Image 1 (cartoon, rainbow, N blue to C red):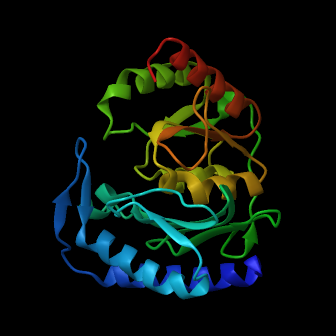
Image 2 (cartoon, rainbow, N blue to C red; image 1 turned 90 degrees about the horizontal axis):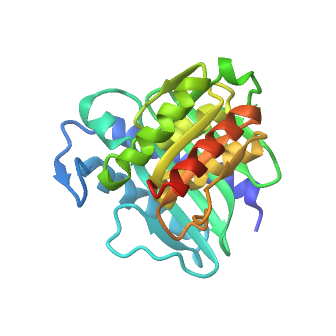
Length: 264
């Protein structure tokens, strides 16, 4: 399989899907399990389109997508899909949402695409071949901790980790330049890859939230991890940390302290 050629095809599909999402008017909104957890008819239509278009590219691949009832990472190839990451942003017209598609091979991510259909920014990576934004190479930044900008998520669906999340943020705020909350983990991670931010933290994310963007960060020179006893195995919800240089180390230490206190 030529993964670079596959990437080109995936990018075309994702761009077309973005156009379809933007063309939808007043999508229906449904609730899911968890606090303030929503899905729209646009999410469902996006996922159906992606599965239909991706399936013939790699017929042996399985699908591991957010809006499926049964989600299990199967042996071999898996497409990990978040049809709209930042659904609440999308519902409220905040214009900061994206499509995220990753391909894993026996548990290792080998291809990732994140597309902000509002700004027409397409982030992409193939393992071992670098990370790109609309064809231009990406590189993480490396600034002093006191000047660093750190993105974070609040894991709003999982209120049990709220105290741990806030504890980590208080620790980070005392040392970093400033904090940012955007409502899209995938785009936050891509901001780290692009050098727009220096680190990222969220206490509980699903595999489709981070799989594609994590590869993009790594290929841009950054580090992505969880914190023990958790791991990034694409099987479970987990804390996700990312960054470069001292900013990543700051986030890692803060997350470790929260875990040790039993807050995460």
